[in-house]
Image 1: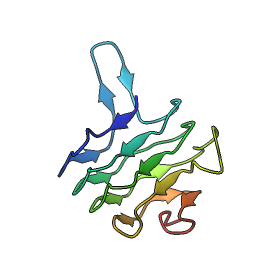
Image 2 (image 1 turned 180 degrees about the vertical axis):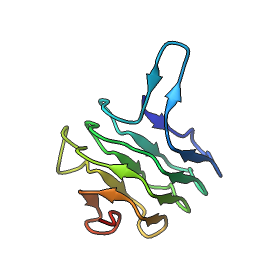
Image 3 (image 1 turned 60 degrees about the vertical axis):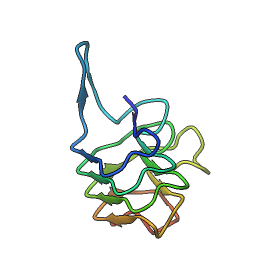
Image 4 (image 1 turned 120 degrees about the vertical axis):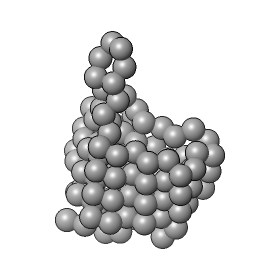
Length: 117
């Protein structure tokens, strides 16, 4: 299950992500897209304590125009198989307008700015 905030979403918290619906359990891992995506206009959100692994694109991606967000204590590994030159475990197109702390990942863009390990 891809977690994507609606345009202009503000002050939302995604924590320990696991979405359940009536049919099955879902997570932010092992899908054909990115695990968690913040899009244009998503501001003031907290993304913490999530796991986003084995996604074809990014584990967590923050798109241009998504600012003032805090991403902390997330784990993202083995993401970006679709296009390893453009997709990573963690990607932020607005650095330093978002705060990334204590995130566990191997590949990030900008390089060295988002992963704490």
